[in-house]
Image (cartoon, one colour):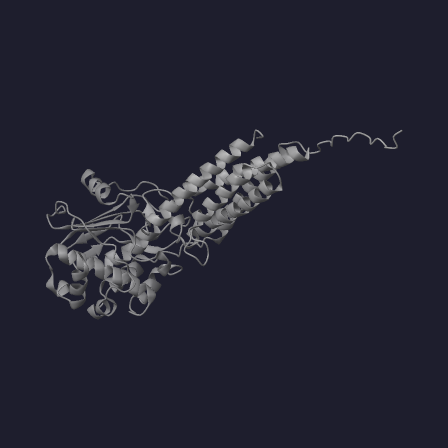
Amino acid sequence: MPRAQLPAILVSLAGIAVSIYLTVLHYAGFQPACPVSGALDCQAVLSSQYAVIAGSSIPTSAAGIVWFAVSAVLWSRPFGRAQLGWSAIGLVAVIYLLFIEIVRLGAICLWCTAAHVLVVALALIAAAMWNRVRA
Amino acid sequence: MSNRRTRPPMRKPVATTPAWVMPAAVVGVLALLVATFLVIRWYTTPLPPPAPSTDTTQQIITKITTLPPSEFDAIGQGTASNLLKPVSGAPLTGSTGKPEVFYLGGEFCPFCAAQRWSLIIGLSRFGTFSGLQPTTSASDIEFPNTPTFTFRSAQFTSQYIDFRPVESSDRDRNPLQTPTAAEQKVFDQYDSSRTIPFVDVGNRYAFTGAMYSPSVLAGMTWQEVAAALQDPSSAPAKAIIGSANLITAAVCKMTGDQPSSVCSDATIQGLEKNLK
């Protein structure tokens, strides 16, 4: 197994854990309220209309579980276009979710940001591996 | 004899791009996008509506605190969510020894902004407010610039209850007022999520959060909200007065249905029955 694959699998597993936690938070339910201080507000994000996949009651974080799980499986195989493409899909999703948090909601959820950072980390690993393969 | 032509050995392709370029590009593009989103947010956040003058503020407060009983009866619970939960602690009493309603909120918070309208209307059936000042929730948060009145300098006089408001932060989230140790203990005990607004009705009922969405007030001025409250079929009236009725019912439970002019009302009695 190439050196970068094990970290990628570990990052994917961490992403699954974070996404499961966010899903649990979602189903625990929220009061429409503010944290005592600050805008780093998972409540505002996870109780918003964007916390579910459009037209469904499935939490967005459930999609995160699926994405990281597929990622873990892909990274256990030899590196190729699949990992690069999957990382690109994740990156596009992160950009969309950042747009929602910053522009639409004006609130940043730290746990969501943790998941985003893990997606970006996987994209960076994929980009670096792609460079190496091409070379 | 072999006719096979020997191929020239494959030359290893020369890497034209250093390995760090792709990851750096990804990080760079992301940083650029985040900066762009922040600029878009800044551009699209509406400015807070201009605060009304002192005279206009007084007119608005008079208008919303002298609503006819028929208005309360027509709406009942309206579209408000009943967040009141029974709690069992030593009865909360104020500085004058009367049963106390304790409020903990923050000026930045849009849910506090929404809930204050109902608190002002509901509690005004038991006494009189003074010192209410117009403000809005923060501009950089969900439901930005929700119009409201801050309790930071508010006084409340009543022969039935005390009202103790604490605005913990100003509109820019700077610390403003601090609850006493006893008040902090009540907050810690009944609001495990540590969110605001938090309202304790004499340690008989408590709730966290707003009973309706601040979106009901989006883009409105104080005058427009006050005007909408005159119409029982309007969305703000159904939400704000519905919540005010729930608060009234909880306070009536706390005061032993005093004053009867308020608490014996059929609508309030009906809501009291629904409180556990």
